[in-house]
Length: 439
Ligand code: UDX
Image 1 (cartoon, rainbow, N blue to C red):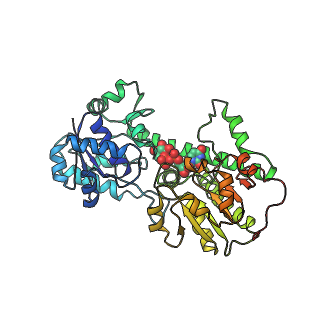
Image 2: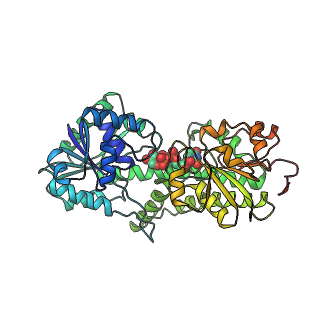
Image 3: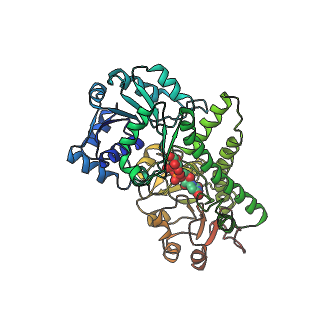
């Protein structure tokens, strides 16, 4: 089939490449000529494992092309996927639908009569219905995506489920054709009306965020009562009604989706007269975890971080990503800098993005360089390579072997055995005296 994908950011570039992989002819459309030129040359402007290979493969095969030309896209495509962003609106909790509205208007103007316009962006419930009413010459469907950064290709080619929000059997038939290889592989399909399809996405993200904040609230209780949230999470996770995934306590969630999506969901529910205030508490618990790391850093520096050399391991909002949007690690690093600490950050992929957004922080080209002379080490993004750091060797680099594991991912035993004062969120502080600042 001939498909267009409008918006070639994270979601769109992945969707376009994966649709080409499924055998379709795909035209990616974006208003940014630099992005289009890069992608057309087979270059991906962000870090996503497996995606550069897929884009290079299909731009070379000719099955995947990119353009800024909506008229060409309208003439080319039988089905148009809209994959533009829905950021948080300035000064509000609600979603900014400017890009979605503009993309639908632009492609509807050029699409063939009766063409199928498929929304994939995360939107407030009611958007699909509004867009369908505004663009009568075309058919609208909603097909939310659930991809995780770092697993975007895998999640698109082998999703847990497909959701089609459709108003006609014609739209469903076309979407079944588009995803035929995915459906043939046994992927469950849920067909739904527009509001339900839109809500599946926001409800899924709200549930995931709630799960993380739940375990982080338990971490707060453990800190107050002297318990260990890691052991607690393991024990409740064996109950398969609860499940072990998304129960890793730590510095909390960030990124371009969960934080803004729960705010937009609570906001939209409020407009509909439904209270989802518990999501505001989920948000507040999440933010408190960042405060906690700042507090612990202050405490471990003897009451003030002024002038303290602090190494921050991690800048991306999670590993396998160079995305720093709403990154807990950088938020903590910036606050410590503001309090007068001398902060040096290292991240395997996100340094360039971090440097642009936080020019006042110090940056190192390796973990070793960041550790050099540090009085305090904060482990804030759980890259696998940080688990490989040898605590003995690291102890020789720092000025004072004190580390806070903000992700519950390091092996406390081996760090402690190498002479480190090792502190993790939600776990009992080590017994004995912590080494005072300056020693
Ligand atoms: C998320 C959803 O998982 C995905 O389905 C949706 O389409 C978009 O939003 P993503 O933002 O890529 O995907 O990241 P995800 O892997 O879900 O992690 C989100 C955040 O939660 C990260 O900051 C991560 O570090 C944090 N997290 C995750 C925890 O703190 N604890 C956990 O147990 C799991």
